[in-house]
Length: 110
Image (cartoon, rainbow, N blue to C red; front, side):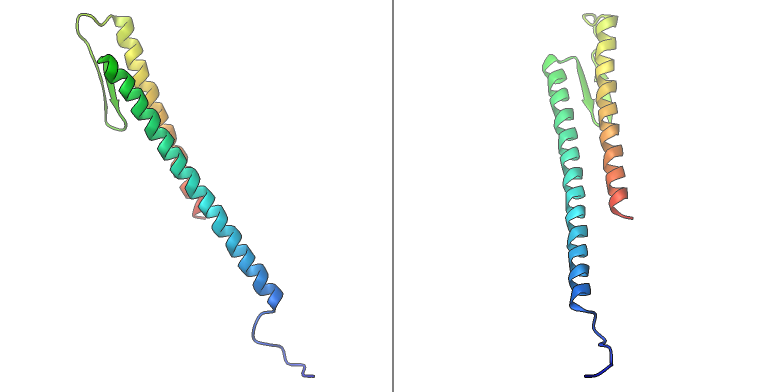
């Protein structure tokens, strides 16, 4: 028998390394999936809310762009406030989804 150590890592070390890498890949895949789900949910919520307001023909929110509220003689100040609040809520939801996506992406890139 020889007392020389092999230049190659032991089989156990190799298996542990491969397992760790597969685990990290799995975690990254889960984070990416979460980002995609959040983005899709935010988009669907924005589209649904916009469709509701468009169907009413009284207000329209385009995520990250603008909010248009009808201001004709049939729109009471109370209704105008409600429509404006609806736009503000949709904008908050959009900002929250962007923030969550940024946080997930930041945590996946240490």
